[in-house]
Image (tube, rainbow, N blue to C red; front, side, top):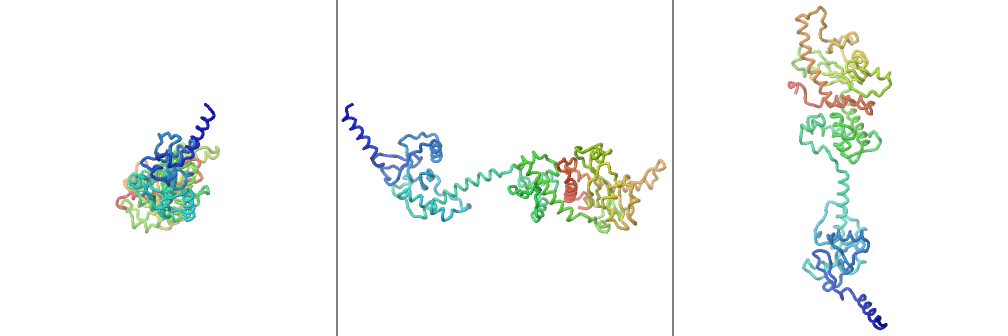
Length: 464
């Protein structure tokens, strides 16, 4: 090739690359956009970026993931309301959409975005597929609306991602319309009772056990988690998976809410408040008519605990009746089946008489009261003056008299409802076995379960 021919070729190349966009026909490659430089000559046309990640982002935005752009592929400037750096963000399929419930951009943000649009130069023509080859209105109000819509779309996507992270796999709203399911998980008769407890808790100043508040989980679901632990004794891993939180959060919620329920329901409504025999007589069931002065029926119940203690402590906790390490509490029940007293928990080896003498129940009795119990309560000598004890007759002469048989039958028919109350209490399965980490909270756990048992429907139909 001669020197003259080389100059000719170079000259032709320089001439071709120096031609303006309108001198070569350029078509926007966005679907449904028919803008061309020979029709809309005021629009800029942008090549795809060289960076592969940015190129893939553009292709995703224009909905052409399978398209392979070449050197001549262009996207018209109508799709870049915020400049080339922001990428193509305006498309015909998004026009008219709005998100009215999301916060609006500030005035400063609007000014900055408007300045960005103006710096890109020129008016903002619309796509030719909308039936026009002319310029779109360039008024600031139109631009502001477009900018707001784009910002709101981004904020909406961000909020959706945050909601997905906070989404629980289990919540009270899923079971609230099914009373039988509510009862299974909580031990309470219906959703209204659970919501009543939530109302009480919402007025209580909660002091979280680990000194950090649980904010992502609603209070009603924190209450549900606590009730499920009390009712079903679910494991920490189980509850953490159900409620989409860590095990530390489960412990924090359970100890906090159960302590609050103890203060509200037991200390506030039950502690040192055994109903008088006169109040009992206003709801005395038929089976207690022979015992009108009965103020309270006493019985003990035991709770299994872990045996990871020293030998001396294990001997104190060992119950010959249960054949293992337990804690024992005295339960007092009114004639109508309501639990009116619960002592602290003692070692399983402690006698019924020793618990009765120490727990404080005798200090609430008055002259004229009658206490009913089973044969194991040989407490007649420690009762306050004027308080009587009614227990089944002991067999002395090898055969009960007819009077003793009738007396024992009357006591048995009355005490059977008390046994049913204690059986209801034990349906809170955490009282079947208290885990080691909750042992120091055992007294509160027991008394919360007592209070929740009283929120159930009455045992006796005539009382209901």
